[in-house]
Each structure stands twice: as structure tokens, then as C-alpha cells.
Image (cartoon, rainbow, N blue to C red):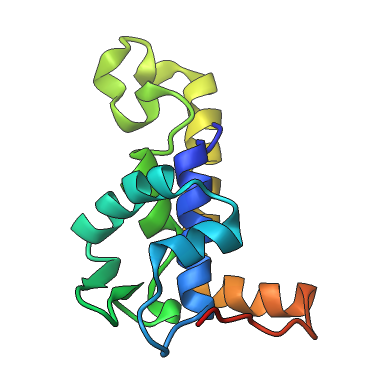
Length: 147
């Protein structure tokens, strides 16, 4: 199972918001510049995140987007599922009815274990975990703000 560009970019955008959490709403153009994501593509990614209520939008001169919940309450699974849907490596894991062999298929057992492992990692990793990892990777880096 490969996570698509949308899933990866959504994670990067959400991490950017988490790094700026508690401050003023963030402009999409600033996320776009910092993360190297085209503004048009970022707009497509943001829409499902807004619909899922993972982020909120503020209009007006001091508007922008921000996290709808604290970073410790947003799991990577929440983000990835919004953009990717089910993460099972094969369809029969989510929907055993698609294959008559599902009940006796040992390969399906392996695919189910793989799906559980992926879900487990994404379920147990929060945006706050990513913030802390980012700070460890770049301990002295100051966040740059554009005015």
C-alpha cells in the first residue's frame, strides 16, 4: 500500500499547522511556500480536511486555517483516512464478500495482519508526536514568520 501524494502532503500541511498551533490562523500561501506544495494542490487537500473538521477556516483580513483540535488529539490515521480511504492492501480485508476464498485464504490472514499493523502505527501517532520528532530533527531551527 502506497500512500498517495495527497495523503503525504496533507500530513505535511497538518504538521505545519501543528508547528504554528496557538498562534494566528495560517495562510495557505505560507504553508504552500514552507512545504513546497503548489497552492492549487494544497487547496484541493484542505477541502476534505475542513469537511472532516480536522481544521477550521477563519475569513477576513486576519483569516486563514488552523487546527480544529489540539495536535495531541489528531491522529495520523484521521488525516490519512480522509484523503486515502481504507488502508487495506487488498480489497478482501475490508470486504471479505468480494472473494469466495476469503474464509479459508491464508494470504488474506497476512494481508489482515499487515493492515492491522498500518492502522496501529497511524492510530498511535499524533500530530504532537510529529511536532516533537520535527523538533528533534531540527533542534535549533527557529520558525520563520512572514509579515
